[in-house]
Amino acid sequence: MAVIIENKQVRAVINEHGAELSSLVAKDSGIDYMWSGDSKYWGRHSPVLFPIEGKLKNDSYHFAGQEYQMTQHGFARDQDFTVIENDGSRAVFELTQNEATKAKYPFDFRLRLTYTLTASELSLDYSVYNPAEDSDLYFAIGAHPAFRAPLVPGEAYTDYEIDFAPAKSRKRVPLANSLTDPQAEYAVDEAHLAVSRELFKDDALIYNLEQEKTIITLQDQAQQHGVKINTKDAKYVGLWSSYPADGQFVCIEPWWGLADPQDADGDLTHKFAINQLAPKQEFQAGFSVTVF
Image (tube, rainbow, N blue to C red; front, top):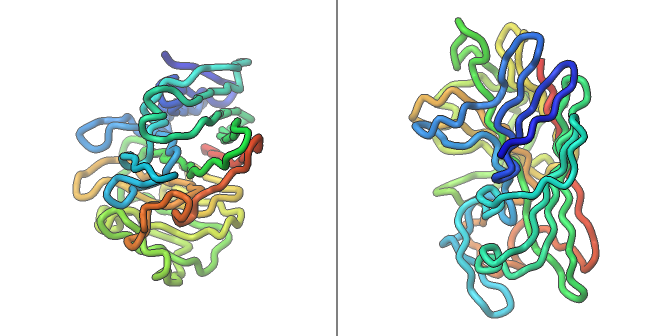
């Protein structure tokens, strides 16, 4: 099932399966800014990444003396969420532990995603609550939205560019075989990137945002159409597109976590960039997408 929220400017479609945004249409132009999900290139639109972001070393971890298996980006994207609120322009989706999640992740949790439309902006707010009485919750969370490029007929993938604001030096995190090396971060001046297939030949480009408010814009060179992603307080952002396959999309991915380092010891409590939430406490984060 899908949920539709809209206002005078924008209509968004969110699937209950994965609470995944599948369509974001500007009503004046009819442009759908979200990737189609063509499985020939990449079969998703905007999955939520929980309770891990990226890949675990050996696709496994251990906690309290027991080993667990979990594949890249976790399980939330493949679970059916419950719609607990929908007023037409705002919808709230909820996922809690179940038999399937407990087999991979031994924690009780409450995950809520709130989608809100305000003019031409769609906000996505995350809430993670730890219902336990006496144990901490360890988790990461992130987004993986894929935006169409090009957006209008007559343009090409390579007509697009990515801009960061503020324009400043940032640290890149190396990625090899889907694992990171945070200790080898290096500074780059990449406030402006021309979109090309070769840009993504080494997988995702990962930037350490240091939880500084950052706006990342994907737009055509004429700056007529595009999206602005306001990351608010994300720890990292990943940029990704299919390579060498010619998928007509670019992902801009705010993350509150990171794939395992190459030297990870597998202990979830030691995991790099993990979030640790005390009993009866709530974690909140989010980002927004403005279309133009």
